[in-house]
Structure formats: structure tokens, C-alpha cells
Length: 452
Picture 1 (spheres, rainbow, N blue to C red):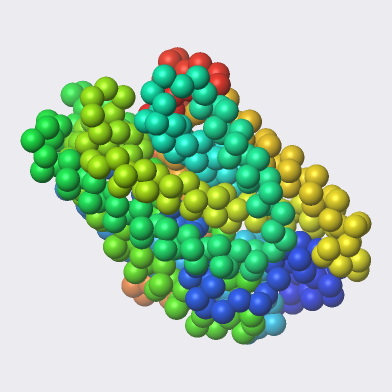
Picture 2 (cartoon, rainbow, N blue to C red):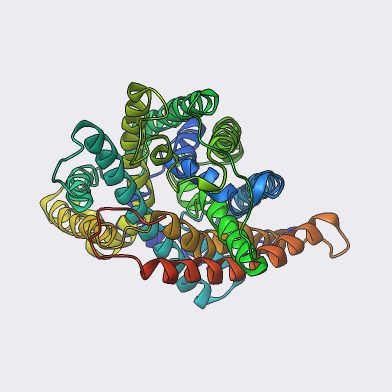
């Protein structure tokens, strides 16, 4: 049974002077808008990393982990949505993850813990999105001009310039049409890449397939936990309360419909990309399966126009993903810098928004150019960011809010998920950071090659 309503520590009177809430997280959306936002946050080009994740797990464990992560994250997001709805019915509508966690758990330090983790996620995904977008342009450029002089960091600079312009879209809700296009783009490049993988696998010059794992037991263990962290990062979003905040109140039931839309797309895209890519390339799968289809040596393994169109779709969606994951950072900035009484587009608010968002995007672009570690970034962000926010906290918040009996199935399922994924997160963080350190030995700053 749920605990009785408590006084709202974040009352509406405070939100009236809170520019982050009034501007960035304005609540005007419908359930399908939440579905678009969720799909953009989860179903991105990182799914092209799934064959790379499978190479550390093999067929059996790969399928098992992919399915378990999907079921657990859907359950987790459903529980968090229920907690948010419960608080709203009790007169405490939370629009930020950090406020929800601090209220339910009754701990001030949890407020800052969530800020830290969300900042790590947002910045990590922002860096990864810019890096992968730059790599997409580089792939096209290297095929059109094999002896061209442009380097990866120059393409990253181009992407950063475009992101600076798009970052000025003022609110999360204003991204709804862009995120609808993002959903269609994710389906488009998935079908193109799957078709290209099937074509490559059936061709006469198909690559030799080897599905064996690492030779030593310790290396297999580290690779497995790194792969688990990557899959966790692919399924994670860490911003569900902020997405639910964009819904016009009351939000009851709307988020579940949005989740069903999102996971319908996940079912189609995740399994097809993982199976087709790993089937063709096995333990030689690249952290970006497009690079496996367009090897540095030898001919393309699929029609160039198919891969080129796929790369273009990926590139376009990456802009939407970078924008979605920047919203929490923008909300924090505007809460501190904007004056809600002077209007969203007043000179007083427009100039700080332009300066702060530009500086944030430049920082992400600079880090992407300096440290091109796409596969490794995925693993580290998954372990230290997505696992705590998407696999641990929602179960804890639900148990604290609804207080299911300790003899109930729900209570023990939630406790089991907390324990298992806390352990997986610790091991995944250690394994991912270990791989990051090992890859650092072969990295040059501002390298023109993304380290797998």
C-alpha cells in the first residue's frame, strides 16, 4: 500500500520562478510525443554496436542479455512512471529525476547524486553522438575521396557547428517533430543495415565467420561485463522523469502508451541489427557495423548507395539524439541563468541561452575530437550512468513509495534486480575502465581513427 501524501518539497510557487521548469520542461505534450522522445533517447545508432557487444558474449549469452535488459528496462520505466503518477495524484508533480529521488528517498545527498550521474550520461552521450556523426561523414568522405586530406576532428568540428545551431531550440517539447523524424530514421537505417548484412553474408566474398570468444578465461569475463555495460547503455535513457514532464497534466497512463510505442520499435530494430551483424562478422564485428561493411581494404561488402543512405540516416538522427540528451544540462543552465518573468525570447534570456548552450556543445565536440573512444565510452557510460539510474533506482523508488509486503513477489523481484544490476554495474565499470586504459596506450590525441 502506498504511503500517505507528504508535503511537496518542490512546490508550484517555486516553479513559478524556475526558468528551467517553465522554459525547457514546459508541459504541453501528448503520449505519442513522449513515445517520440523515448524512442530517440533509446533507439539510436548505438544499436549498430550490438554485434560488437555480442562478440564478448556469444550467441546464447548475447540473446539472453539482450532479452533480459529489454524486459527489465521496460519494467523499470513502467515502475518509475507509476511512482511519478502517484506523486502527481498526491499533489507533488515531479518534473526532474533528482527531485523525485530526493523526495521519495528523503535524502538531500540523493539530489546531488542524480545530478552527477545525469550529467555524466548527458555529457557522455553528447560526446558520443558528435563523435559518431563525425565518423559517419568521414566514412562517406573516405569512399568518395580515398586520398582526401580531411581528418576526423575536422568532420567533428562540422557536426559541432550544426549542433550549436540546433541547440537553440528552446524547449524539450519543441523537439517533438524532430523526434518523430528520428523514429522513422531509426527504422530506415536499421532495415538498410540489416539488408546490407544479409547481402554481405550471402555473397561469394563473404567474410569468414568465427564466433569464438577470448582465449583466456579472465579476458572472457572482462569482455562479457564490458558487453553487458554496452547493452545497458543502449537500453538506457536516464531522463524518463524529464520526458514525462513534457506531458500535459494529468500524465496518468500516457507514459505507458509512449513506452509501448518505443518498445515496439526496439523489438524490430535491436534484434535484427544484433543478429544480422554478428551472423556476418562474428568476433570481428566493429564497434560501428557500418565500418565492417565498408572495410579499409578491399571492396564494399554491400551496395554503396545502400550504405551511403544508411549513413545519411544515422547522421541525421544523431543530431536529434544529441539534442534530447542535452535537455537536462540546458534545464540546469537556464534555472540558474534565466529570468522567468522576462519571457523565453527576451533579450535578457536569449543571450545567456545562446552563450551557455554554445559553450556546452563546443566542450562536447572538443572532447569527441580529442578522445575518439566510441565503443569504450558506451561501456563506461552504461556502467556508471545508466545502470544506477535505469536498473537500480526505479526499483528502490517503487518499493519506498508503494511499500509492497516483504513476502510479495514484486518486492523480491525488485530487490533481486537491484542486487544483480548493482553487481553488474560494479564489474562493468571495472571492465570498461580497464579497456579504456588499455586502448589509451594506442591512442593519439585528435586521432583520425575511432578506437574500438
